[in-house]
Length: 277
Image (cartoon, rainbow, N blue to C red; front, side, top):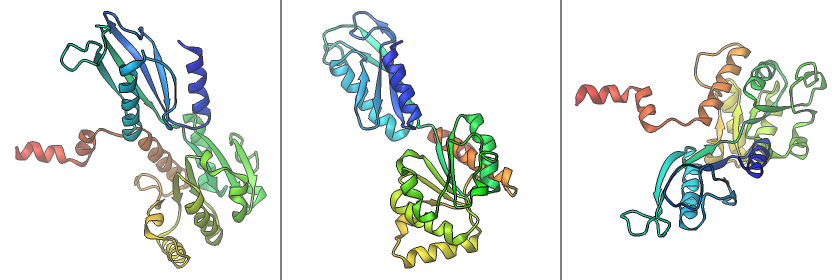
């Protein structure tokens, strides 16, 4: 195991950045990358390590780009023999199997509002090794007694949130506040500055009022479509603890995309096909 790659993988995980790890898992004959040779590819295309160089490595980089797009990896076989059908332009003569693994960014949540749902989330997130921070303009709602495991606890006004927090450092923003006006200010600025998932807890009436106000302020339909509201998987959640479970379940689901066949099976489409075939 290459310590450089291990350190880099840990660094990217701590920064909540996704990456692709490619590892030689089987070899036959003469090959440049020996068993266990690995390479990490970052989301910007830069990489560390090697699986053998030359055409093989370029193929693996392309597979890494696909893995980022689909958020899924796979096992791939390569013949390093230019004279064989489908072989790479190589004269090594052997073959390799390379596992391409997509490693998603570990969730790092920013919770606006330290109320009951945020408190319930704070009891679940550490068990999954998900990081979170809490911001509220009420000091008594963001104390260490309520959120002992939070990375950060900040008392901050809505209009100063992004001067205190770096938006790109967080994978999810959840607006769990106690005041519609304050939530609206955070939401409006988030649509312009926060690049990742935005979730809003609101009644249907509150949500429609907020959306109408945002449209009056010039926010377009595409931007509003970024907002997830209601949040979480629909499990009929009512209590703060149940809502927290539904939110975390949605995050977990998003980290592990299902193959198309599994999605169809969940919707019952495969049963329909089998009955009509």
